[in-house]
Length: 142
Image (cartoon, rainbow, N blue to C red; front, side, top):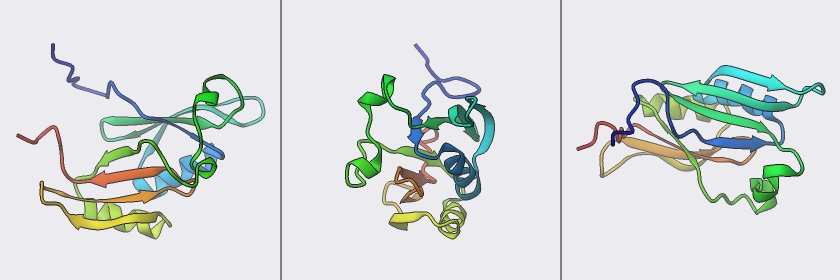
């Protein structure tokens, strides 16, 4: 069975932020995401948002008590640690690194050329989530 789709992605990371509006603005500025949809409740909190980057998507929302949220922790609740991170493929990884750094990304692994091909770096966004950005394209790898 072939799970490769021609448009869009079938696996979409979903992150929660204490201030989703600030996260959306920063992710668009620093990483080059574009708003696809943002749904707010009557108090202006983000209940669901979709950001796109190339053929991929990230979904996010504001942290809220109860429901599915009881199964998740924010980085600031667990000494900045994460159990996973979202990855971005950037064809010009060096330019992406410079853009993110200029926007205040907390670089946790400096930009470097990798032995397995491509280049990459890792950073935290302003609310502590980890991101890996690299030019290695697993869809093109042999």
